[in-house]
Length: 304
Picture 1 (cartoon, rainbow, N blue to C red):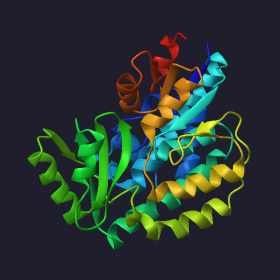
Picture 2 (picture 1 turned 90 degrees about the vertical axis):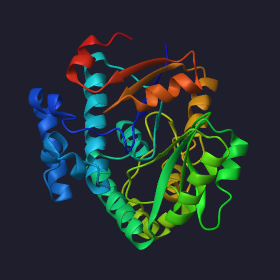
Picture 3 (picture 1 turned 45 degrees about the vertical axis):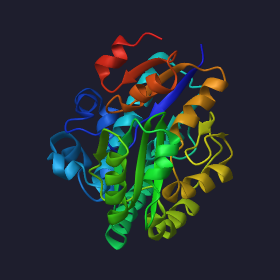
Picture 4 (picture 1 turned 180 degrees about the vertical axis):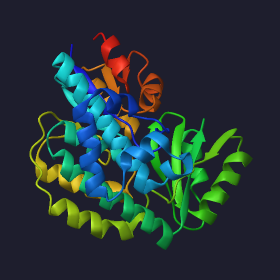
């Protein structure tokens, strides 16, 4: 049976993530060491010991999730010789999926993530913003909620009835009040350092453009459904263009999963911390078969 790779994004992190791999695998230790040299700080120390407030910061969260997810997927592939038919990653996770598909090297991916995370954090300082999850709203209600003065957009189209909005602080605060006034019971402000996947990230684009254009990309070993288009891409030029556009545009996650289903694939393996994407899958595609791989034990217990 064909299987899809899923790689999580920001919000899936937790203190201690990846430590079991580090304890058991020399190659995993080498990946953490290599990444730390590129990043200029000890990412294993922050991943394993936090504190949580530090790990939540974008410049630490993104590489920590990437390394954990990459190691989990690589160890799984090596043990069972799994060949992914297609892949997708949520925001940051798209870079992870591209790395596992050998479009970019591990070291180049860490460098891209370093620039991406720092530039996104800086953009959050230049153009302060916030994000909030709106649970249980229809598409029409989302339009009403986002009809505010100022910059505000639907940023993560995660599943039917689960949308994240992103924009200027006052606009998002007004949107939260609007949501409550029209009967939306669950509105959750997110603990992030900026208005990701919105026009407020425009100042981060130039740095990301430079590092991506200076990085050698190859055609991917298997197609990756990219966030911006919710369509499969394999050619390096298309991959690069969509990866740059991702910063300021919505993550079309539910469409991405539906596209994978349209291709006849219902088995998904989420590699990395947490089970966020598997949870979304059950909302988007009730017949989906989902596996979570985040520890060596889960790899040993895996049965396709």
